[in-house]
Image 1 (cartoon, rainbow, N blue to C red):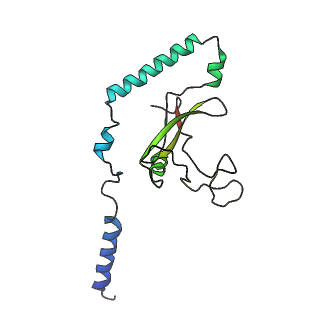
Image 2 (image 1 turned 90 degrees about the vertical axis):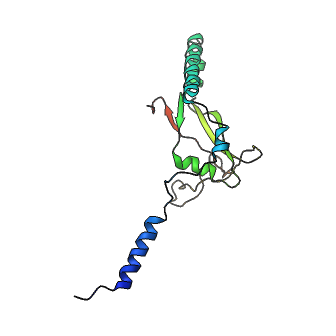
Image 3 (image 1 turned 180 degrees about the vertical axis):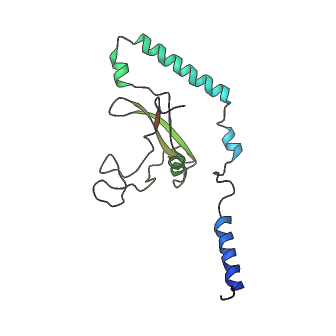
Length: 165
């Protein structure tokens, strides 16, 4: 057996330490708590808002029960969830200082949340957020609803109901 080269062993230990030690401390996105506090409400208040909306939605549906237009054309969710990476893509847009959430309606009449990054002046940022696989080509290219618009927003959240706890 050959003796273990001390330098090789030391280099391996340093490399292992570098690879495991270079990760962010807790994996969390840095937060300016003072700025975040401008938008923070208590869970009690948030739950009250959500309950109030649900009650008003049921009352609206009851009042408009004879009007199938509302049920057909405006299928209201309780909420939608988006994964962390979709939110990070919005916040990573050049010049992004926040996110704007719009209410939209898809082709089947479901009310959807549509998110865009906003700049320091409160204007929507229209940009490519991520490269998406092009359909039927196997190449990576932005995918969009319009052939003249390569910019993106975020949608396709998990609707509640049915994807809720």
